[in-house]
Image (cartoon, rainbow, N blue to C red; front, side):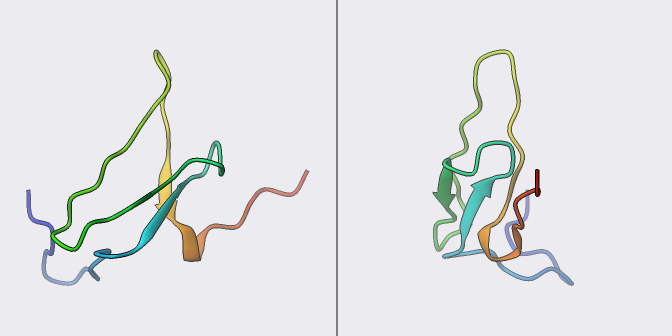
Length: 57
């Protein structure tokens, strides 16, 4: 896997938020690694926090 492919911006140092549960966040390390959690038998969708817009209910 390539942490910085051509044509894509680097997310190093950026914060990610779980779009399904915005209280869960994580940071992309400077070398591109990131730790992601997901509930058992479920899934999570992480997006850049700066681009995240919570759904209006």
